[in-house]
Amino acid sequence: MNELDLHHIFEIGLILVMIAAGVTSIAKKFNRPYPIALVVVGTIIGLVNIPVLEHLKDFITEGEVFNFVIITLFLPALLGEASLKLPYSHLKENKSPILALAFGGTLLSFLIIGIFMIWLLDFSIPKAFVFAALMSATDPVSVISIFKSVGVNKRLATVIEGESLFNDGLSVVLFKISAFYLLTYLDLGAIGVGYGLWEFFKVISLGLIIGGALGYVFSQLTKQFDDYPLEIIFSIILFYGSFLLAESVHASGVIAVVIAGLIFGNYGAKIGMSPTTKLNINNFWEVTALLANSVVFLMVGLEITRINFSDKWGLVLLAILIVLVARSIAVYASLLFMKNFPYAWKHVINWGGLKGSLSIALALSLPRNFQGREDLLIITFSVVLFSLVFQGLSIKPLLSFLGVNKKEGGYKEYEELIAQGYRYEIAISEIKKISKKLFISEMATKELIAQYEQELSSLQMKMEQLLKKYPKLKEKQQSILQKHALYAQYEAVEKLIKEDVISNEVAEREHSQITERLVKLEE
Image 1 (cartoon, rainbow, N blue to C red):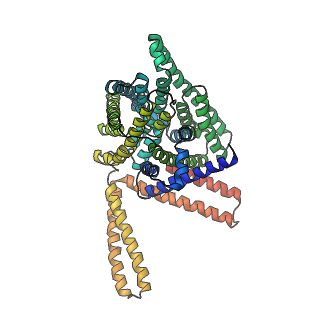
Image 2 (image 1 turned 135 degrees about the vertical axis):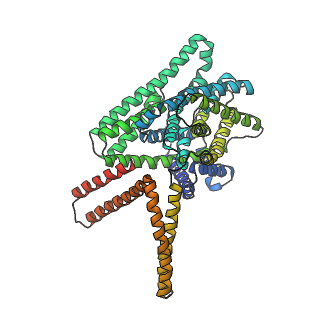
Image 3 (image 1 turned 90 degrees about the vertical axis):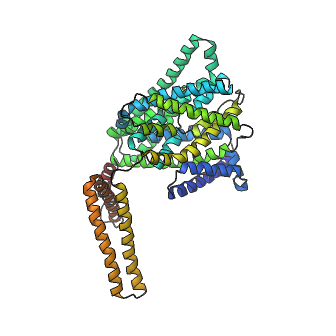
């Protein structure tokens, strides 16, 4: 590839990032789930003829380019970021529903979809079970992004994240077996079933071993340094290295990254990371994940428009129905015997089984000569589009309807008091400013201000009563004040350095203490 090509690729990448950043910022401004907005905008760009963007669309929607960007470039970063921030204690507390969904639910969904596709649509065995593998797992890129944007109960969020992280690895293994080995194993009969089971456990086990070993080694490595830029580089090497190493020995790269991230973010953080390092590593991966998610969902929208859905609507609708039915059976059956697990949560987990970019990337990775490849692409893209747009948009209303995302007691009244108090403060400020500009009499001004101050006094009394009744709201207010106080202290130290009042050594020590307190507040 010559220099001109590389320059052109960089330009295309920059345009893609600019569009993704613009759409994401607008969606966040209006408090809407940005992944859905990006898919919709990507689809519109793909359908509308915009001469300036034609090169972008042609390049991004190339199967090999899409595959590389989603699976090799972004997936390790997104999985690593999610597992890095997932406390092991939360996983341990919710291990039963996570394991039931990630393994039992995924396998059950895989079997149900495969059998239904053979029975109702007369698909061949490999074709049916390849689609089953693509649809049996929830895509972590989609699930985690959507649920973060709408907000859910912490325990429910942990179960959803845990399921989406682990069953993704399982789904990739099932996909590879279905696409390349299934017929051979079936021809061998009982021996073939044994080979299939061995291959399945070998891929999962090797992924666990590689991820665990590298996670431990890099955790020990962080112990030797207190240098957060270097430790961020260690985390990059860990996530991409564990993924690529596992894939090179035909193990599960997804499982390897998840395990490596969990160990590094829990054990490594405990033994080898200072508060400053923890804060900066988390900030770095948060920015990386936002960028990756934004580009991924825009690419999904662009890719979907490349598929011709004409005269396939019957196939598409039936495939969507089969996936929804299989997901429902898998979720409710796998959680059937779970105690103290609210039924409303099961509905959310069922409807929140979103599909996304990984399903499309895997479908595009099928060999060109794979029988039924075009049909698989059509129904995979259809289910992903339905999942992200229809299911994604309806998650927030579903949470409200089921009362799952209810805030703590008194929160609505608290917000109303805050809003009213803010209004009155702004009103007083505006009256003082306007009275000076327009030479309004002091008597008129004072009377009006006194009315607002009386309202504020009444609000203050109501707020004090509310905080006594709900102590958690008081803690929330104190936490906000502490954060702002610490940010102000940090800036004050910065100012002293600039004015050469204190040395860099003292400033660094002060900054470290402030950062440590900020980290504790975040936790």
